[in-house]
Image (tube, rainbow, N blue to C red; front, side):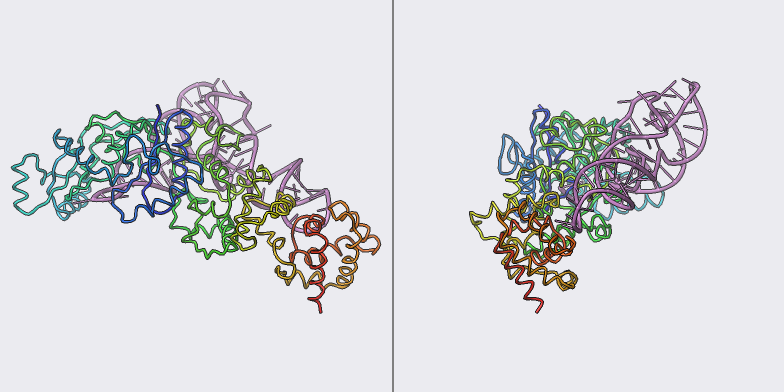
Length: 519
RNA sequence: GGCCCCUUCGUCUAGUGGUCUAGGACACCGGCCUUUCACGCCGGCAACACGGGUUCGAGUCCCGUAGGGGUCACCA
């Protein structure tokens, strides 16, 4: 049975790189018919774990990455919070001590630093002298009588090599001699992450450790702990980073200001921000950040599109397959095809995936997903009126390929606003509606509208063409001012659709409003 | 700096010694379509980091160099 895990630290947000790591773990477990466990790494005892964890769980739920054991769902190995497992870690440390594979160390920070400095001055790598190591109670008592306090350190091997058979990177070896006697327990009895992590992975029966590359160099000490405790080793797979756009440096949520200088990233951000702002949110790059998954949820991205994009960041099936449904991802995923080199985050490509996935959505779902955005923007009441679905569906259908994310429906807000209230682009108005002869055309076309029957796209097109011919004008002479009168904008979807969706009376109202603005 | 990892178009990637004058996708550029904006279609630009080997033959194997990245806590 394959059991994988993702172990977030409750920081209050879900990083896009973390999502990819979780995704790969999740895919591996799902495809092997195994289990995926969520464990919370809160050994530093943050005060408000609850609140800091919620956004992370929400993020996973939104993405549809479900866990078989962990917070909220429980499981046979509960608790899944490290802060609640300290007793277990202490036992493990005691065991290590008993076996002579760890020792109590009474050195002060200053003394240790002095040794480090000395090593550096002599240009050799630092190896602790173990001068304040206590292996017997007598030694310990002596140090304690000096008022010293003990931490517990690993008694790491000082010769030989540690071989890691990594499923992604192949064999990687480290000299044991370069490893430090890492601390596993503080003077106050609390235990450190690496110890806790190894104990938990054993207790939770984790078989495959799929994690970010940053943990590769931590692996020897974890192997030492596991072996010292007599645990079987899990299989390791170290994933390359998700890097910054156009660079190979690890993507970081804090460097958002820098990323905003990248035009593609900027565009992704601005697009999202304009949607969020129309939803009445005051956003800043601090809280509304494309490095974090909330961003995509709030803007109306499809979770499957985000996952599909992330899947291909460091993994591929072959030389052409790009689109994967959730089921296909599960079916085809293999660690063997994970890339070794870091992949940089490409905002443009993410949007392209989103667009493809969105376009495949049945109209009904597009409608359902658009409603909350209209509500947040104050364009539609809550609960939505029952006669909303039909016109909304027509708008979305007419907008067609112009929509990429659900929040884009707000680009067509004017359809949901009152005829005398929707905003009008003054520049476009001046250019087109104030143009020579435009007013007369609009007035005559308004009258023409009364004669068109039925008031649908086909009849409107025929009627408009006939009108244009009768007037002896070019199509564009009418279409441009008309579009601005009807929508307030110079760009939009097909004009016949626009007329049909608004309906006769609203078209007349809008044209009259435009004409009155000329006075 | 030590240790470890990585290196094919701007970006994501295919490529496991000959079928590679290196394929696909996104982006970009041009054209077509067209009532605007998109979409769509057609076309184009563009990469094996460098140097040595091994081999009849190297993007593919080996060594070195350079560059990039990660990590070196009583953080997780």
